[in-house]
Image (cartoon, rainbow, N blue to C red; front, side, top):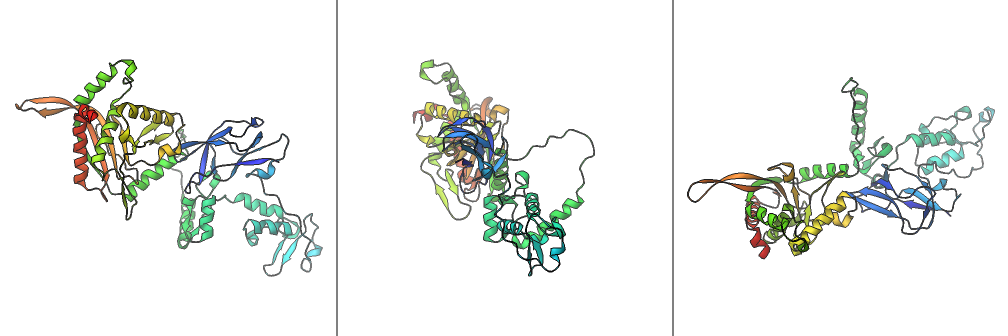
Length: 460
């Protein structure tokens, strides 16, 4: 008997996943544990393994499709087996026909039909049993349906047509509607118009929202009449996660950015020595960013108010160890893997772990656990020539450090002469709800001192 492969559930808040790549084709043999496909959710790419052995009989969705969790995406069984009943895109099988119920007077004079019909005296709906059962099963009110059967009676194909015209609703959104308090719109923002949880409106505002949407739809005019080429890019997968989280970050936190700089001479000199060191030492690959991550991991131990989470209401959690997030630019968008217990790593080990995580992100092999649990984040735009910028918090974290490039800064010497000394740009964004400006400034000052004396910090 054929078995369905479902889109796995990835946490309580994930409604759908994007199929990135199919690893098996229809007709391929499949063993337990084989990777069937890769799916993307919450910035991570997850491998979907087979839990059954046999032949891949069908793939119900293609690469690039966004599929709700717990929905069948493929079928495995023996060659030749019928899997139509497992296909979520196929029409549901109709129940067996019921015995006909006598129609009202005069109905027998109408043309015969291959479907028996039933007349409901209370609602005056002339409908076949099969159509009625299908409508009930799908919670569809047949009163508003036009009938295409003899005499205008509603038959099964009328219900199927109405169901096909309706957008589907995600499991999470359906549960919210059934619990009450929310109303689903006529069309959603999911694939094929699927209604997602984000599309729901509060019940007492449903009619207003629907009316506004209708008015906008009827008054909409094209923005341009030219024939220019326009590329339409769906906002989904990693891009959608980034969009939602960045907006939520700015809407739910009080963000303040402090700018500073650090004397970079010791750091640049140390980096030069590492590059010239013997290959056997394994230090040639240590970068400026690795040195910054190391300095941050040690400095945070003296500033626990920044190595913390805020739940947005009444609780601040300060962590004894530093779980350091680092922003990685990938073709699929920004990703932030986490070096857990970064304060316990040596510089060499920290550099190796940072490279491993960055490579995993670039190659879409990073695991969900490696993208979670950060207590502080570092994002570096120095290689792109940026001096200072305003990094956006990654809630529930309460601070994030932005690293700029190295520029010559005029500094007055003891004899009054001005020297031009290379300085590294630093930008610290804090959540002013729980971190005041002075503690943030003290951390930035302490970090700048640690970078300027990086050789001493390594000996600590």
